[in-house]
Image (tube, rainbow over all chains, first blue to last red; front, side, top):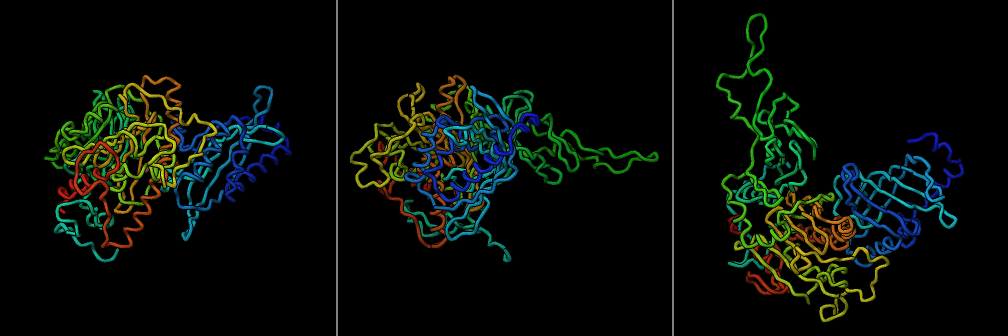
Length: 168
Length: 420
Ligand SMILES: [Fe+2]
């Protein structure tokens, strides 16, 4: 936590960051998965990881990607190769804050965190809490827009209710 | 439930074919009384259950909490370096005193009345055992004939085999090597005594009977059909040199195969999951590098009855523990690991390939999905039965994968144990 650093973030930038999260979850919840990789930089880190692994510094992730290409492969994999019962996702994001700013190779990196809850609704079934956790992210300016250079989805949920098909 | 459950007085006979196991009655997967009897006869007696890897508790005092059947157990390393497994169940009031999945302890103290146990499970003390002195007299205390040594934690029999830890509530259980039987060389191929490193955990709850997961990894028929990645990239498909091996009882098995180049061939004709034009944007997920310990085969999937699956598929290795949760659900806990002599590149490769395996894995998320849907079918038609006849109705090892022999083998053993 560095209040001094995060207070240097302009109101305008904060609103852009907030908008990024709104766009991101709308993309997932509306199942526009082909657009999802474009929220990330070409070289990136995307991890969905149990909190126990994160806290104990174990590296295994439930989903892991290191490039936009791997994210595209994930989308192809879940849409064309993974048999699954289809479901809707609904993300609720709250408690977003800027953890700080970093300079890396002349570019500014915005460090953020937010809570999330994902509800799952399968066909002919009641809605249920699917996965809850927090995003620990790094955002950069890239090609005139904000993109995630890193997104860690660290989930509290001790058990995944059967399988996790779509990204968080 | 209002009415009490009927007792499991006599084994129920549900249309099993007289001396075959090529048809499994649906009730085998749904009946509550049968499930309770499975816990007694399979998980708590006569069998070894997986509890963990020695590398999870490297130091004295390190412990891991897990389950055998529905009972909580603690695997702990004591000050002599030995691994003990005790039940998480205070002798006094039954309290599950340990409430951490992993930790470090000098002793175990029950929070309720502070009965305390050493790391071998011996009761070493309890408050007010000799009473409390007040106004010149002793109040209370335990009876004179109360002996600490009569009230240890339940101690399980432990077998540590090349870094893998199994335990049994049954101290009469056969020794572990003979329990593994003919599967032992395959077990020792993966675990030859080298040090292991823990990469992390995945946990899922699958709404299906626990035996369905044993079946899934005794079923070489489905991977080249359900799993696009296997057939398209040649990781597992019916035109490969493979072996299906069982122990003499038919309870444990190994499915062994060698990857090929994939692509179109006789086995892809009419297989809708085959994607001829599938190409990865970033193929580092499939950057397979053969390892010396494979001694050839690129995959060996072992089922150690009743609670463990050992996965070796290309550079990804894991143990998968089955924890039953009633007749229609089980928890599935994955521990991905590597070896102490892995290079950083190999560790990264194992982690990348882990995208194929686990609750979101490209070739395993759908196993959970189909198991759930099988269970849906079983619940609807208690009098039906499955068909398990690929490769015939008999049981025996094969040198190909076009067979369901391993499933038939397991149910032959199961019928004997359950008296069905
Ligand atoms: Fe499978």
